[in-house]
Amino acid sequence: MNEGVEWALHSCLNLSWVEPDRAVTAAKLAAFYNLPTAYLNKQLQALARAGILSSTSGPKGGFRLARALDAITLLDVVIAIEGADEAFRCTEILKDGPGGDPTVDYRETCVLSQAMRSADLAWRRELAARTIADIRATVEARFPGTPERTRDALVP
Amino acid sequence: MNEGVEWALHSCLNLSWVEPDRAVTAAKLAAFYNLPTAYLNKQLQALARAGILSSTSGPKGGFRLARALDAITLLDVVIAIEGADEAFRCTEILKDGPGGDPTVDYRETCVLSQAMRSADLAWRRELAARTIADIRATVEARFPGTPERTRDALVP
DNA sequence: GGTTCTTTACTCGGATATCGGCTGTCCGAGTGTCCTCGG
DNA sequence: CCGAGGACACTCGGACAGCCGATATCCGAGTAAAGAACC
Image (cartoon, rainbow over all chains, first blue to last red):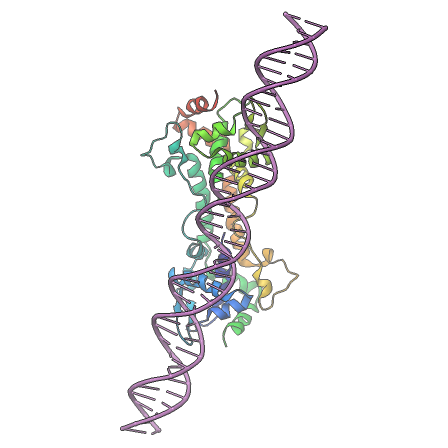
C-alpha cells in the first residue's frame, strides 16, 4: 500500500485540531513530520479532489477539512489516495480455461473471486466504521497534550 | 496485489482434482489458462517453499499438493506469494513529530496504526476461514462438470 | 531372463533483462494582501 | 483621512525525472526413467 496513505491520515487528524476557518499550508503539515513538502502536497491534492479537504490558493491559503469530522471515514481517505480498486483484481482467467465462456462475468461467478472479494469487503467495512472523529477522541483520551501541541506547531 | 496470487489459487484448486500421487508439471498448469509457463513456475516455487506444494524433478516430475485440502487456507496461499507483511505499513512518522519519543514503538501506540491493523486482521481472518476444501466443495456443487474436465486437461 | 550401467530426456530452480507505477522534484497559474498614490 | 489601483509574495496545481519491485524469460543442475549391454 502507498506510503502517502499514512501521511494523509495523520494530516487529516492534525487538521482536526486547528480552528476550522484556519487554513494550513502543505509546508507546515510536511514540516510537522519532516516529510518532503511537494510530495505531501500531491497527496493533499488527492484529498481535495475527493472532497475531504478544501484548498485555498494565495497568501493565508492552504488546506482545511471540508466536512464534519464524523463524516470522514478512514476508508474515504484510503480510497482518495489509493483509488477505489480492490486489492485482489480478478482477471477472469477462467475465460481462457477449458469450458470458459466469453460471455460470462467471472468476477461474479468464480468462487475464488467471490471469496477474495468477501475478504476485501470485510476490510472495507472495518475501515468505513472508523471516522476521524473516533480516532481524534481516542487520541485525546490517551494523550491529552496532543491537541495543544499540534495546534501550536501548525498555526503561526 | 500481485497477479500471481490469482494463478496460485486456481492452480491449487486444480491440483485438488488430480490424484494425490500424480505430479503435474508447471507447463500443464500454465497451458490450462494460457499463462506464461516460466513465470507461473516461479509462483509454484514459492508455494513449494511455503510447504503448500511439494515439487519433484525429472521425468514424471512436477508439483502436487503437500497437505490435506482442509489444511490449506486462502491466507496461506496469499502469504506464500505476497509475503507476510500487512498491506498498511506504519513507518512511525510520529517519531519525527513534536513530542516524538525514539524509544516508543509507535506501531503499537499510534491509534491510526492500530485501526489500520485492525482492518488488516479482519481481512486475514476472513481469508484464514476459507480453505481450498471449502472452495472445492462449492465449485463442485455449482459446476458438477468441473472436476472431470480439469482432470482430463491436466493428466496425460 | 535378470541385473546393472549408461544414456537420455525431462523437470525444477535460480540467475538474468524489461517494464510500470510509486517516489520525489520542479516551475507556472491564480489569488489575496499590502503598500502606494491620488482625491 | 479614505478609497482605488497596482505590484508583490505566497500557495496550490499539474507537468517532469528517478528508482524499486513486479513481470517475463532463459539456461543449467539434478533426477528418474528407459534402454542397452553383460552375466
